[in-house]
Length: 361
Image (cartoon, rainbow, N blue to C red; front, side):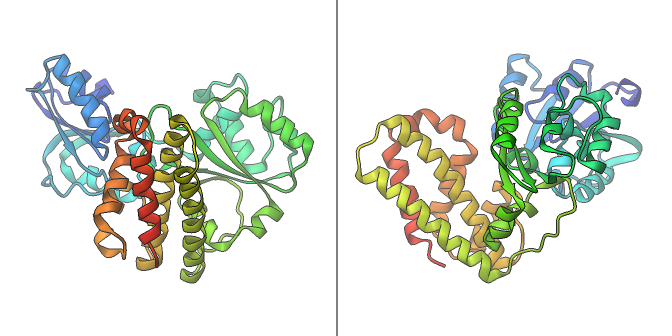
């Protein structure tokens, strides 16, 4: 990156999607003024702690900004922009992000961007392979579903892998350091041998989590549940997918709402220890989030990408706005609220029960 840096010390650099300030702090140490932006307030709170600890407040400004919409900045403002750590890959609208990065820099200034492609996930499934040198083997897998030589997915059969999808918080750009790498793996068939081999694969990767389906399972999947495939990134395969209709999504909203009410009322009316209740709070906060995303799709026809975007569009939805916003913000700042939830899980379970009870579409 050094050769792209502005020659003038004191130049202003945009660190877009810069998270906890890894690059911003290094640039400031070299005498540059930095505007550090991220969509996550939690990330920026950590960054501000680091900046203050290193006495760099005069050189680094932090702002909550979506990389896809930087209209808060005028055009031709920055002497350089960077988007390291793959925010362009995870924002779901890379074209918008790139246009915005190009707009806010001065003429002839540089934009430095790192991106993850569909190839980047594959090396995680290959034992002993350096991801930086495995493009050829990754592309081979994406073409054929099979690697020459030793590969942990080899045991599944070269014709058995139908498709692989990357989804969850890491695709949406909402991941924490301990967030799972969520995948959906569709196989032609699944048996005891396949399950055993997959267990051997996944035991090596603590944060790797797979939702496993056979082709028959996929066909039997209610159409409303297939919305999750469109919220992720396809890594392999060309399976025929069609967006569910509004009526099909409505059926899924009703089904998931009743399922959540069942679990919540069970834990609220029968004795359970606080630890189990606190775990349920986390799961049900996620379910409330997914429920609101489905409602947004049902009402507006739009696939809402992130919690921030969803909060901004709550006024369009026929839900209890204040309660929905409170639950989404609790999920956004879950790590900070975790001790409070552990102390009083019933209070949060009651709020979640009320949310699902009054959310009738």
